[in-house]
Length: 110
Length: 116
Image (cartoon, rainbow over all chains, first blue to last red):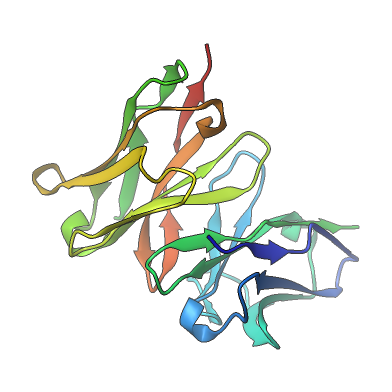
């Protein structure tokens, strides 16, 4: 089973921009992996932010955007706010029918 | 309104079995992909299993051969039969519908604790 790697942690100042990445041990991430991104705060269920690489879920602010950067999927938060402080996970769909979550990134806004 | 409600969690001894249920409303499980996802205490999300609309099933390596996902169309419910449970299976288990290969997690999950 492939390993999907994310940065363990990230700090950003309020109003700043950060880009989280999602890499695949067995090669490059592409749109064929349908990368999706999830935000989770403690004690809450994950919330879908982005799906199919770059489509924002309903109600998600446009400061969140998804893309492919090089050989990785990426989530960019532009103009970070205090309530963006959360854990973020990517999810990749594999051609053999399974899914794999990334290792997760803890984002701190300070 | 789309809802998914997980039930069936509890305390179980190592080696034991447990069946989780995911009751859906607002859509039909037989025409959707339903996944199970888990999160161990203080850890990240782990994808566990999926049952596709055509009935095919897939599993993470960590549970393959021990867990079985099935569907009861008459009750619009998906089940996860978990056998040979281990301490590392301790987690909150969520069910989720896949839409364009993204997971829509609606419920608060059900806690499974494997301990003697």
